Length: 409
Image (cartoon, rainbow, N blue to C red):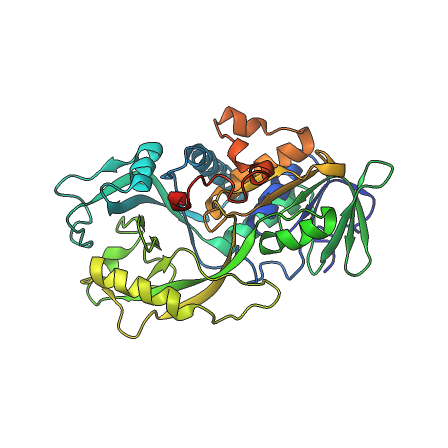
């Protein structure tokens, strides 16, 4: 593909971003917005369906059991609004957010506390939709919403080009090196070479392979295959579960962990899915593996919690395969690659199925780390990046997990 802004790709770039999913596209936009000459490289076609940034929708929420994510979600929400204003159109539809689960679930309690959610009273807006069992609670928060995923990635790529970035797809990066002159040299499978002052690596499910080949490090980012399910809303309730009606995004804590967006992208259908899935190799995926294992628990959950509103007979109407890039603790990796590269190469990876919402914030953070050697925006917003460093795996292969039962969404 020719350079997206019509320029020949030559000379030295200030920042080379490898991987044009949501994180890389946001990073290219953030860097080019500051006047940097940015190059964004994508291995496949732009807006492809082989990674983790495609599809119809993603949710945004601030309710997290880990305290380092709510400030990042609030920062990201602000940056989503700024980017939409820059683009002149919207990709995010605000909604309320609902969390529900066992009243004594520690992850739920922490999420309510950290996210500023309010537990519902005896009478609450969606009491007629959900069948909440004895011993469970529900909590609402204002920071919810649905992003149009592929449209959002396209928006950030277009904004980056408008700011002067060069975008190339069908360009597989196979090596990153640091020559004697101190620059960063990026080599592709076709033999092309690009020179930059700094490099940002955001290749999702391919992170472990690329980092291993470049620096010999075993970064524990495991791709898994997951399944997105759309279910038929029962007749007479179609308008009740829509964004227009104020229906929330929601998450159900416990096993399984269930998440949902309101009926929006496909009229009469609602997206309800299970977090997680079986390990996979991103270069040799079985696109059907685990489908039954991922759909059946969702059907059982729907029958127990939303039986009057969602039909599970015959299974989901639409099934879409996707990938997560999981770390052992499900915390992100946002750090300098280190070693011979020092602070010249930054890695953003392991977003573990809950990163898309943070794209604008992470893109800004990665760009600042690459260009300035520090993330000032994160510090100003109260975002703690310490739990996201690579060195957390040095003495504990499970990273931030202390006990086997500590894993929270």
